[in-house]
Image 1 (cartoon, helix red, strand yellow):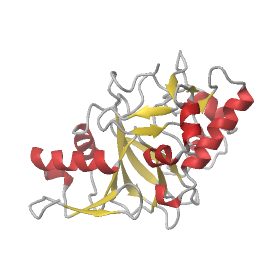
Image 2 (cartoon, one colour):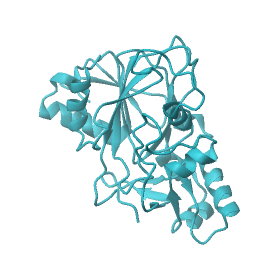
Image 3 (cartoon, helix red, strand yellow):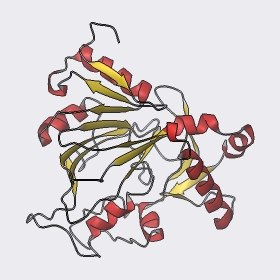
Length: 289
């Protein structure tokens, strides 16, 4: 960015990601936002410290990236109950989902429309740990050998939240608790290519994660082995993985079309309250097969 830029970009020492300095996301005009959006497309992850957005301010900022997923416009992901107490029941469905999300995934791959991205901010953070990690699936695809690229070029996998939760021993059923049940009662399990082409940049990215299973034409064992091999390959190179340590007020925007992410463990006797706004996918490019 040149000296006239309304903000300053500081690159991470990774294949992706920028820290955005000297910015107030509440006051960006259209020109400044267009510049920020382009940086998001180029680097896939924007880390914006010290914003301290209200729920409505975060929703308004997220809506500039695109239409939001209904019901997930600004929702807390938290180990704090509505009465202020901490969740400590081992069968608490919200904690089952939180623990499930500690495995690598992309949002909404288990829905008819994969999410475009997300705006995520920290309201309350534990004294240590509780990070969020991200992985660059563009760089992962680029690093694959030619034989593997040829192997996966025409392959697809099913994606299911109910399946992935059950696989982890965290089975969760829609309607059984205060968890809203989002993604658990999908009538037709989506099928998605193992190689995703980004609709705005044209770059190819590896598309696997905890929700992927059941590659058509393969046995269950062979399908699991291939998906796990690709997943482990994608996060093996430290230059392609970034783990963000949160400070209250931080805002992060990620491109769900080319990054995986996962929550990291923390001491559940401490509160962790995050605000999530999910950006809906374009039906032309993010629909399942």
